[in-house]
Length: 231
Image (cartoon, rainbow, N blue to C red; front, side, top):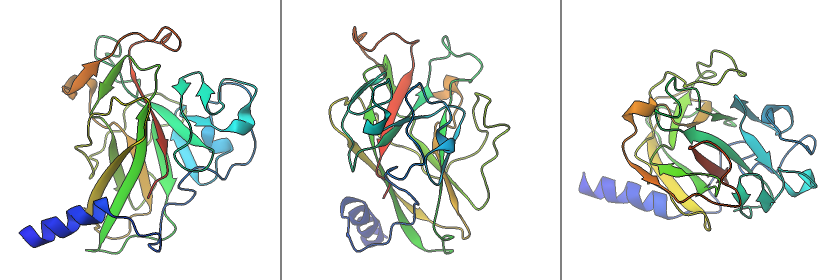
């Protein structure tokens, strides 16, 4: 058992360029159009990704405007890979969001279903946006054979589901990208991955309050992460 645990741990640390990445458009480079306003409908122009309800897409081609790279309405960050990345609100404290409405998700597709009892490494890079006034350990991943249980793509709200991948680190770094990695034993047939926070706001206890950013801190108190390069 110890040897297996060590092997799985090393799978997270090491990355082989020859390994197949099953996440389609994993670094968000493939897109249909550029957008010069505040883009609330990422699924209209980012290939193989959906969102609920209004995750953001950042790309240099969106310039001039608030959704470009590296500087945008949420902060300043270069892409971890390529030119593009995404961003979502993942948490707001209960006194800011008592009805669990400020939950945004990214919904991606896999190129083929996962095989039962096989082990897969699931990894992504995250960076806290300067607009955030609080950080949390909220990044979670749900893997499903069917499209996740979303009431409506245009309604803010928490997806009521139990993600398999949890216990991500609390990320406060706004300068660098932090790698978040899990090892997942598949049940078989999973074809969608949904990234976000699935817990009620009242259950989030591991948080860090941050100083107000005078350049980007014009929003309510919430946690906003940039994401890039799913592995």
